[in-house]
Every structure is written in structure tokens, then in C-alpha cells.
Amino acid sequence: MLSRIQTLHPPCYGVAHERLLAAQRQREQRLKEEEEQECRRQDSRAQADQQHNIRRQEAAEKLRKAEDESNHSELGTPAAGMAMRRSELPDAPTFALKLSPIPLALLALFATLYYQHLTGPDPGLDLRTPESCIATFNFTFRINAARSQAESLATHSWEYGTAAEAITELVNPEKAVFAAEPFPEGKVPEQELKMDQALIWVYQRIRTDNVTLFADEGWSVSDPASLGVAAVMLGQRWKWEKYIRAAERQKDYLLNDAPRYVNGAVSHRRDVAELWSDAVSMFPPFLAYYGVHKQDLALMRAAVHQVQLYRDALVIPDGPKRGLWKHIVGPSELADDGAWSTGNAWAAYGMARVRATVSGWKPSREAMGDEIAKLDRWIGEILDGAIRTDDDGESGLLRNYLGQESWFGAYKLSSSEPPFHSANVLLSVAETSGTALLAATAYRMAVLKPEFYAQSAYLDWAHAKRAAVVSRIDDNGFAKPAVNPLKHSSREPVDASPEGESFLVMMGSAWRDCVCRGVCAPEDQGRVDHWR
Image (cartoon, rainbow, N blue to C red; front, side, top):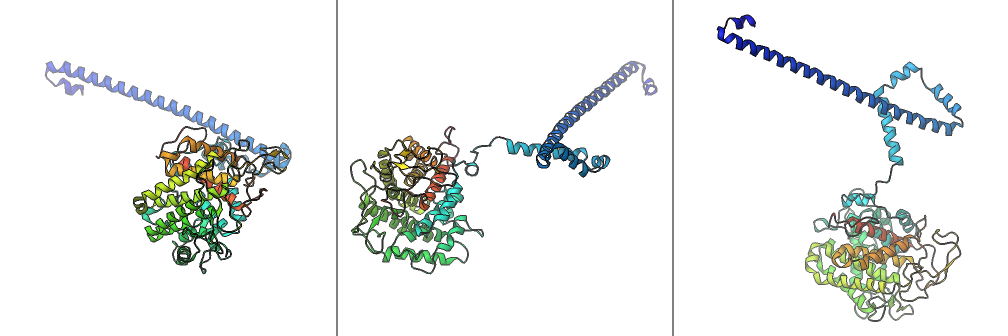
């Protein structure tokens, strides 16, 4: 290089030489910096390896301690456990070769993470989406135990139909009428190859060769229709049209052949024209749902009209119980002018189901605004009456007959009751079944019409009633005291009510949906507005 530079003209030699020296110095400096960077990288890797080895040793030590504790508990003494483990291990060199550092580290890491999963804190309610909220929701009571009791206790048509509705709301809320979109593309939801759990349980109870959907109760007109929604859902399966035909016969019987009360309302009973508040949960929700299946607005209007006829005959017009419904009107000895809490709950929740069906189907939502407003008002009348007559501060529950203080006074708890009260204490308590379903109604309406029902006057009351009911649910899922559903006027509560167990499931599902739809706030947390 220098010889080539020296051949240049003399004035250029000095400049070229200095440039060469400068280039050499820059190259040496760059090499030095690269060497220093490599040293730093090696030091960093060494430190990382050292820390990794420390963590690996700590994890392995935790694993060994856990094994020692396990062997100690299984073999009786540490020495026996150690002898057993040593006899099972191969020679040290072979064992060391088989458990190389990488697999050992992975095993230790897995053990540590699994231990943290088992002993770590509950992740709590996941509010990121409605689906994650539903999956992580804590009902604060054993809701699946209540569901199991509802299934095992059911023997009558209305008990089967109510349990099927409760299971759908719990397990498949996206297919219930209270879903955000209950009718995809304006149709009843399709049934896939694997049936919904509610339908698996109920389908064998539905008669497909009879005028009505349940043949063993010849005295009732409306009760078999409680199975109608399940029959329509079953009819969406491939080659299960027999359930649709059965639902069609049930609809025809209600509208064309069933006896009528003097005002034109479909009678609850066959042998005498009589109206029971219970009936509003039995056949109007079915008529409305079948209207969606047939794309028939006339059936929707018929469902609402029947509700109105029942209200006209049963509503109490004035006084402290105004807006509440009488239980039974008619010529028989069963006529009952009292405001039975469960009867009012049947009526209110049945209307809420009709309302959700009408507003959930686009054609009826657009054409039946007046009917929707009426349903909202009628449901509000019952809730307002229940709140107004809610005077049993000792139990927090509603009385069996609203506004009558004598009901279930001095109920004696046995020693097998839940521990929220000591045994053999006389209490002036009320009843869980009607309380649970009216609380469920308040939650459903808070979602359906939040601008009115999501007020504290309704939600705080619903929270209080739910808490009172939950405090009386035992580990087997039974809520006590519950009214005898076959003897509503009895002053002796029953140990188990089939419909009462379904009401617990409906209450829990309604509260969950209110939280997961962003209307109700979860306990001990602020208001949720994620999906409104």
C-alpha cells in the first residue's frame, strides 16, 4: 500500500498517508468496540444462565419436597419413603443422562405452574365479553344442585315445562327468549346434531300422538302447553317434524276447542270455566313462540290478548294490593281472591317471557309497540304491588299470600335446616318460591326495559329478595320454607317443591344475565357498562 502511495505526486503523498493512518485507527477502534460488546453479551448470557440454574434448582427442590411429603404420608415414615424411592431409581449416571437439564427444567416449571394454579387466587368474574362473564359467573349458591332437584322432583306437565325453560335459561341462554338475539335471521334457533341439555331431558315426556302435549292431566287445559316451547325447539331437528305437528295440535286445541271463561279467556280447567293466574306462564309464552315459528303476527297478538283477558278478570283494582292478581276466579269452590305470591310470580314471569318474545322478533317488535307497552305496564303493576306489600322484615321473604301477615307465622326449623338460624327457633317467615320468581322477573325486566326497570327501586329490591332466598338454600339445593304447590292454601310448607327448585334456577340465571348484559353491577364492584 505504501509503495503505491509513494508513486503518487509528492504533494499528495503526505495527505494520502494521513488518510491511511486515520482509516487504520477507525478500524482498530471498531474492532475494539465489537470485542467489548461481545464480552458484555457473554457476561449477560452467563448471568442469565446462572439465574436460570438457580430458578431450576429452586423448582426442583420444591418438587423434591412435595415428593417427600407425599411419600411420607403414603408410606408412614420418611425412611420408608426414601428406601422405596432409592430402590426404584436407576444408577446415578444413567439417571443423570435420562434427565438432562432441559427436560428437568420443563418438568419443574410445569410442577410450579400447576401448584400455583391449584393454590392461587380465584380469577373472579371476567367482564371482557358477555360470554366470558357467563362462563365465570358465581351464582353464590349451588345452582346445579337446584337444577338437579327440579329434574328429579318433576312429575306433572307444568313441572316438566318449567324445568325445561329453567335449564335452557341456565345452560343455553343464547337460545332463550331473553337472549340479546333470540331469533337469528328472524327464526326459531336451529338445533344441531347434539341437542341442548334441556331438550335431552324433556323430549321423552312430550306426547306426540295426542291432542295435547301431556296426556295424563285431563283436568287442565293450560298446563300441557307449558311444554310447547320445548316441542317447537325439538321440531327444528332434522326429521323431528312430529314435535311440530304435536305443537300444532296443542295450539289448535287452545284456540279452537278449549272451554272459555265468560270474557273469552281460555279456561285453565277442562271441567269448569275457571281462570288461574298460573296459566299465564303456561300457554301465552307458547302461543307467542309458535307465532315466531309460523311467522304469524296473529298468533303473537292472540298471546297478548289472552294475557289481557286474564288480567281483566284477576287484577285487584284498588287498595294496598292494587295491581296484584287474585289467584283463581270462577264458579267452583276453588275460587281464591287472595294475592298468592307464587301465582303473581307465575303471571309476571309469563308476561315477561311473552314480552321478550314479542320484542325479540323484528316483525312483532315493529308492529306491536302498543302491546309491548301494555305488557311492561302490567308486569310493573305486579312488581309494585309485591314491593308495597313486602312487610316481613324478619325473614326478608315475601309472604305466601301478599299483604296477609298470618301466613307461615311461627314456622319451626328442624335441626337439619341450614345453619343460618339455630334449630327449633320459632320464626315468622314467609316463602321462597314466589319470592325467587318475582326477583327473577325484576331482573328480566331490567334488561328488557332498562330505562324504567333498571332503577334502584326495583334492582335493590330484587337484590334483597335474592339474598334472602339464597340464605335459605342448603347444600342439596333445597330452598325452605316453600309453599306446597299442590295445596297452595296450606299453612304448612313443604320440604321440596319441584317448581320452586326451577324458580331458583330462573332467579340465578336472570341475575347472571342482568350482570353479563351490563345492566346490573356484580357484587362489590362498580357498575358495568361494557355492552350497553
